[in-house]
Picture (cartoon, one colour):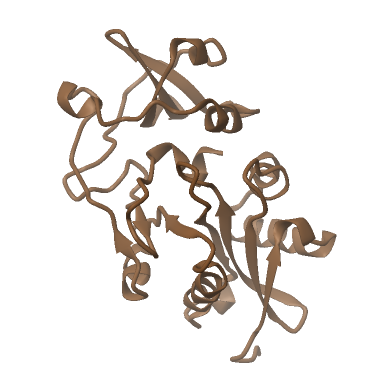
Length: 244
């Protein structure tokens, strides 16, 4: 039997102990069935923008839930992205996710622009907490008019994303090159335009290309870009933490 109140720890990634890293790993395996050590290191240990914020909820010494805010700046704006969220099965339905998100926002909102890409399950919860969704447009990769909306990814983010990332490839349409995320035989989402020089570091992907947005504005992964503070800063698709 567990208690209704939990100890909440706010820890910046540079201060993570081995125990907290183990707690993250074990809860990740319990929730998703796997732990990606390369992705964890990119987001929290070797993040090119600085330290991320991780919030842990403990029932005595047992880690019940984790909510992360990943440092990922936008256009020279200091920014944090709401990222990995995990709640142990026996603690679900206790409001821990909402509590941890609110605690994180309270900690960060003065100094950072805060944004995220919640899935269909968590999107209504974010909306209820006051997060806002960005302007949503429908467009296909094959649509010439909307294709121009994709920004050219900068070298800093490009190098960060492709480092040891075997699921990222490029696709070519007419004279343009695009960064794409591949799962199995299919390309899930096309994220950004590439310069020709950047393609030399990637293999060319082949396969079915899915929608970037559907008519409800949801990404290929079933996500919607959202923000907390304001929407003066454009949220680029390639910033999604699942790219890392």
